[in-house]
Amino acid sequence: MRTKINLLILLSIFLYNVQAQNDSSESNYLVKTNMLYALTGTINASIECKISDNVSTEFSASLNPWDYGSWTMRHFLFQPEIRYWLKQTYDHAFIGAHLIYAGYNFAGLKLPFGIYGGYDLSEYRYEGNFWGFGISTGYQWHFNKSWGMEASFGIGYTYWNYDKFQINSERLRSQGVFLGHERGGLISLTKIGLSLVYRINNN
Image (cartoon, rainbow, N blue to C red; front, side):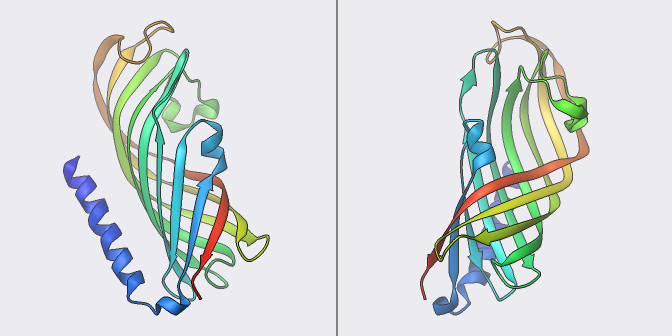
């Protein structure tokens, strides 16, 4: 796990240094928060840096430390991404590639449509971490010089490593009957967002 975190940090430093080599007078930065995550009580923020006329990098992080009565989706998540803009940076549509790493403690939820391999969170608790990579697409539009919105969606491969527990509503987070350690990978949703965007101009 420590190796994976170090690799993500090194990638982030590399992408930042690439961005820093550009003319700062032409650099723009976006600060964003994903409102879909916020609706679940997840604290989240992203910063996006312009590299060139068609390329940018985004660094996003989120944290949910809460329990919600009979269910929990506690986690932290880090996701760096590089984007290619079809028109120009921060304008209309983009395609991207990202890495993802998260630690989590999920229980008490019933996920629809069998997503994430049909994990039954209503009867079991899963505590562990996952990492992976994916591709994404999205669209960004601006209301004025400073404010805008972004919609994004991504899929990819994730590798899960976790302990599994039998639970009930009264012994949800820290207890439960230990059923074993499991691991495995799957193709899944790796990104979804509807974000409020604030542009920082330094021209």
